Length: 298
Image 1: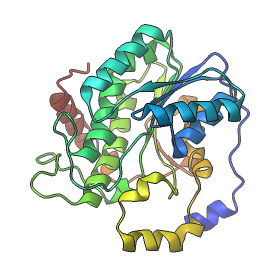
Image 2: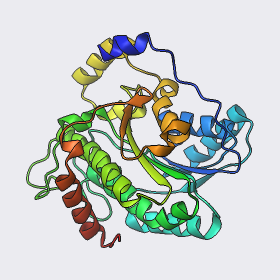
Image 3: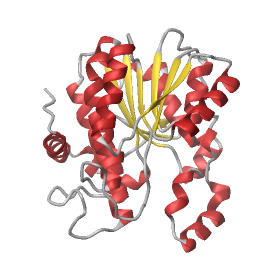
Image 4: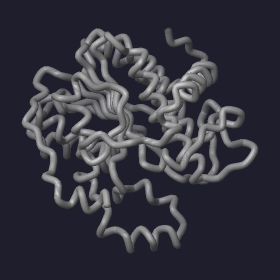
């Protein structure tokens, strides 16, 4: 039904400009992150893409500049699976950037085999949630000083199949790669929910979103039968440009200035799972994340 509704709804467009604004996008050397970077650069923003692979990042910067006609695009090294890298990156941003108006926590890993980050977190919760939680924490003062500002967390409809295992957040007792992915995407929604509350009255707003079922590099860890199924359904999936639209919507749509904490899909408000709206669970995840990252977020 949702698919049919969207088929007949006019595509969202906006001529909002971002002259004089700075946007930071994680994992923007490929896929929807790169398409988001091109769009924001076209709107006049200074765009910083934060990537692990600098060779791919530099190639992406060239492409973003060529596509947007905006030379104010740079890449910086950021490995979200290593808190040391996150801290060094944030230190450089805080030192060198006078403002940060848009933070897009876009990078992610999906249904990968069990592995651990440099800090001992299970890879999916570690990169998709903990890494972005720490990055946001380290940049929040700069973002507040830059208000009005927005923080966008790219989640997924997979959050609806997830639950947060507060006793075993790192899936050490048993690992199911799909459950771990869904848990990390639910964590993105809950983080946004808490963030919006904590930022009330600061001029900084927060949004989470489902980009759609997008054909991206993230599919590489799917099994052959799963990849076969994805090929069959591919006519109903989105390419990276289509998949980037809801992120762009959350970053620039003027009517969202007064909204915060919501979940979006297909450039419109969408309903997230009951767990995604659970205040108590959101608070418990927030406290656990602070403890595990050794930060105190007042």
